[in-house]
Image 1 (cartoon, rainbow, N blue to C red):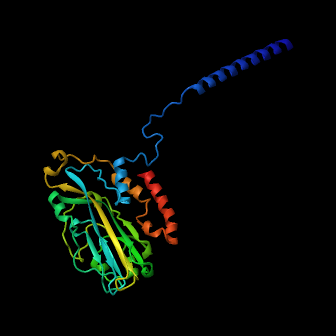
Image 2 (image 1 turned 30 degrees about the vertical axis):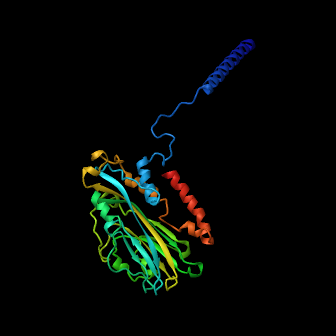
Image 3 (image 1 turned 90 degrees about the vertical axis):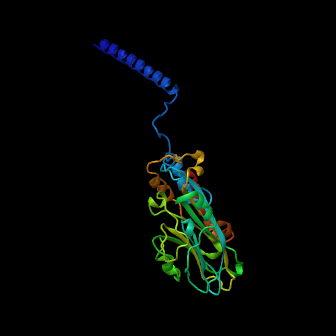
Length: 328
């Protein structure tokens, strides 16, 4: 009985050793194989990388309109893109306030408030057409906004730099309603805004309210009055508490990137009316998701670096730039 038990134990031990040897060889063989590729569409890609390039280009243009233009990826036919710009100087009169308003209609693109006797915003009269307006009308019949931006640089001396800049976006409100409003009054009408020391300058970028602001083509309304509400959101930068008597001044520049419907085939690339950019389903929602992570208003860092306030914000700007390069 003892001998039989010993034989069985010996047999089990031999079988276990053989099984362990087989497993070891199999594991070694498996480890030497090259890993299988995951061919599943989108595998290994980040969420940002899966967004189509045309959508990322729209988001990048909205976030950085002075650097990038783009086409709306909805498959529109017979359209082309163009850009209009404006620049000038604003200064105090006997009052302590001045500013500039910009909207997306080429025929009524800007409204400066300069040299006034008021301590508050003062907008009366008509919007001003862009200098490129006549040339634009020869090529395009209708327009739609892709992106827009406004910058303000303080150009006075350090002895005359008191005051603040209010920068904000407005929608559905006419300029006549905003006229003669103090700083607190403007904040109640703005969709979003920031207030920063005048010496730091300011840049604000436009944000669409909804899909229609970027997808629907519109006809221009030249030199409309201040009582007429712009058809889409607009940008305003207003200085308060500046040194009177022309001693405080700012240089401004603005830009608006568009798509326009060509008047005839002679202006179309190749003479054809095919889609400029193929349609990308959900482009507006996807670009909006990217844009929502980027602040629409920042101080002008070139002017702000020399100040403690500006120096701290340079770090924030670097972070935002890093995010944008990753996402768009």
